[in-house]
Amino acid sequence: MSKTIRVDDETHAALSELRGEEETYDDVITSLLEQRRETVQEGAGLWEGTDAAESALEARKRMKKGVGE
Image 1 (tube, one colour):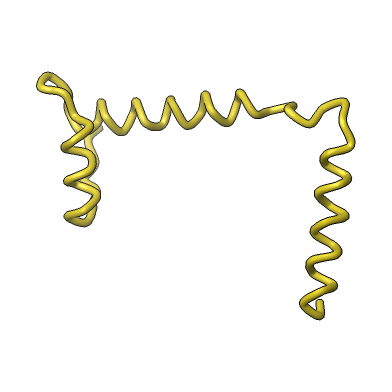
Image 2: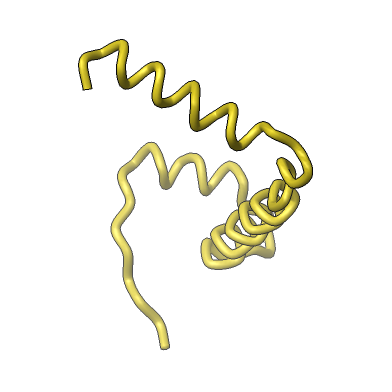
């Protein structure tokens, strides 16, 4: 099933630059989504086995306290 989506002129121009001669806009968007998924998956578990998550939470608490929350 086909759907119509609206994008502004700047977004359309950016997609057009990424689009190859034989590609559709759907091909470009699908490729971008796949790249995004791969990037997210590569980062999954990155902090496993470290104290980075705890350190980030503590830093967040300190920042929130610093702005009066």
